[in-house]
Amino acid sequence: MNVLILGSGGREHAFARSIAASSLLKKLYVAPGNAGTSQLATNLDLPVTDFAAIKTKVLELDISIVVVGPEAPLVEGIYDFFQQDEQLNHVNVIGPSKKGAVLEGSKEFAKEFMMRNNVPTAAYESFTADTLKEGMQFIDTLKPPYVLKADGLAGGKGVLIIADADEAKESLEQMLVGEKFGAASNKVVIEEFLDGIEMSVFVMTDGNSYKTLPTAKDYKRIGEGDTGLNTGGMGAISPVPFADEVLMKKVEDRIIKPTVDGLKKENITYKGFIFIGLMIVDGEPLVIEYNVRMGDPETEVVLPLVSSDLLSHLHAFAKAELHKEELTFDLRSAATVMLVSGGYPEVYEKGMEITGLDEVKDSIVFHAGTKESNGKTLTAGGRVIAVTSFGENFHEATKKSYENIDKLGFDRMYYRTDIGFDL
Image 1: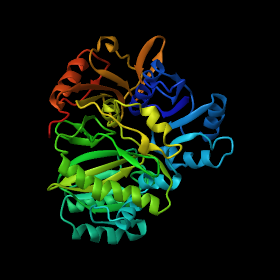
Image 2: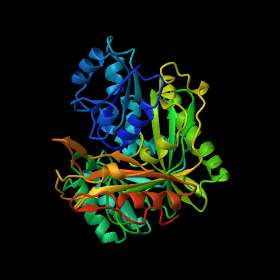
Image 3: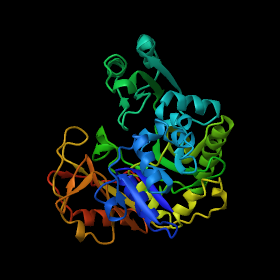
Image 4: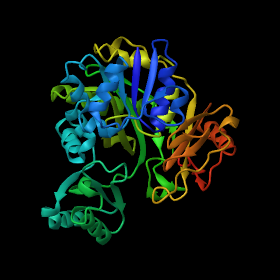
């Protein structure tokens, strides 16, 4: 079958690598893709939210599966667009309906969904510019630090954790009145701070049954020891070493099952991936957030550990036959380290030549913000490359990634040297 992956980052390169290995694949396309995906697939110059242009290409290239990488097309309703079009409704779109994508598109909706379906999460309240005063009063009822979340999509940067009450109130005003995150912060969710250790669980569901993928932990802050500004993610480890059978049984019974059952109960069409961000507090899992697609850079450690045929599993979504598929996993650990442009997540330059790509041995290089020009690979984004390696444990895996990173270079290249430091 012919497959189209939408997106241009490391996550999409990881999807391309797994799907390209399938005997079911005829031709693979990525839109818009990057310098890495072009080695496995044909890149198409298509914006991920231009549904009319995507339709034209899907029909022209006889695409039978569309794998949606980023959240924007899902929140804008690409699944529904295909379902409602007689020429397209035979295509298997991997991703939830517009209604399902609201789980990520609105923090308030996600919290209300958890409350309705008895999924454990932090206590919270939502506020708008009209209720700014009440929001400031609510901050006074909480213990520090204070968690402020922009309700809408803010590129993974719309969450603030602030130790001082006055500073939290000032930030709340900046978000609601000063539009700190644009329309995304027209509404702000304030919630109690959960003191524990984070991990992520990835679930694939065909709307009926589900399968759980390896756990992961990512590192969002730009600085060593989790300091500095939030980024899209600086690295990840999979599986999480503390996720034992006892914890995973709690996660399954209290979180995964009620989430999938809740979607069915509320008649929300959902055929895709659910990313569940968890905080483990004294051995008890609570949900911080849902994402309606695979995370980045977690995809770069999770998918390489899936040893069965990913395309076969995705193909099963069309007839809701995922329960018949047998997922198998590599039992080693994987670690990925993200190389970023100097200045990221704030101002950075693009167009720097990347050297040493041919010298990497025993690691996978996933391209994120890269492009090809005159036979050279250049930087084209803030997060540039993810280097993923395997080992008997995460220490071995990270060591191998760092050894290979030493062979790579571009002007003002930066990366964290402590991925996995807290494990």
